[in-house]
Image (cartoon, rainbow, N blue to C red; front, side):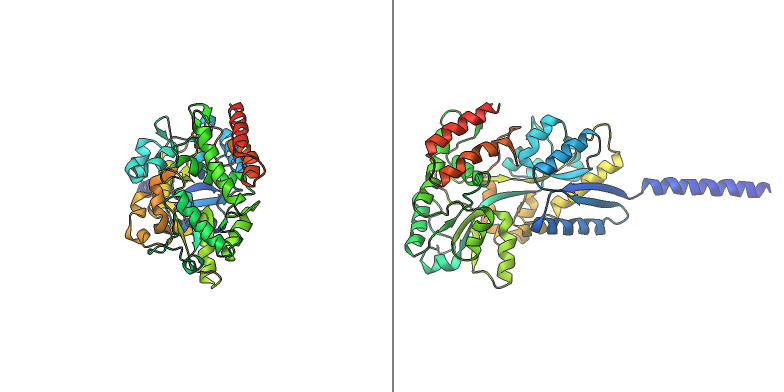
Length: 427
């Protein structure tokens, strides 16, 4: 009887030890929110599936996709305030200043970077700076998604407007690019360049790029359009309004129409985001598209510069809910794995932010991404302001004046005067 008791006690101890061991190695579930739809959504779901398969029994991502823009960011803020935000989420770099001011993002600490096996040297300076506030990082860049120039190789070639390396002629100067536009116009093309001129928030990308090509900035300290920056904005608007007035660019064109004008062959040039690359690839694979390419936007002023934003990964600061060390380690593993496996993400047209991926032979052979990868050296992000970023008030103000100006119904000088007054009135 005594022996049975001893055995029973020993067995109980073994079971208890086993339970503790199993608990220590229990699978961590990482609650994930994103705002990715369309081609982005398809690719991210595949990455999540691949991660879960490779980490079976250790970490699983439980992902939810929410509505892009203001609805997403409003939900994050309200959820973080009551400790109900996810463990991690996608976040636009342009929205980080506002999020930090609201106290809803956790710092990505030096120890976190070390644990992930990532560092500042792995990122382009502008991309790293975009997630940095007061020398602290609040997100891990996943990509950059700039605007690019899409072009119809067949039409340009037929009109002797391709260079020997198969790119549009005239990308290095205003005179050169306008010569290409006019060459297409003379060849009978109604609208050589398709632009989203009915949406001022979208056209901000092109306008701000042209400002940056003059070393202009939207915000200096706490002042909008200080010094000669108003003049540089006016210069940008005058160029674009001139293209519209000369019939070189589409008028009052919304986003779907701009893309359709290009894909139908009616407009041989299109300025749009890299996220439309999957559209072009799919149509080409279906035999419904001409030979096409995409390159960095033309240098209209002094030097290359292109507006961009970044998808990043951020960790919410959940009020009253501290993350366990095990959960935190799992979140860092997810972010690290996504960065190091972002070559697949590039098939969505984006440029992976993690340098070793973009420097790989595989990426350098990926077209058209490799053709516009040079833009990484010339990126310009939103000003670091709580008023900036996706769906921010800056865009609302400027859109009101950009649309009539780009469509020949308002003078650029008048638009700039009104924009400067209203932006500074937001402060």
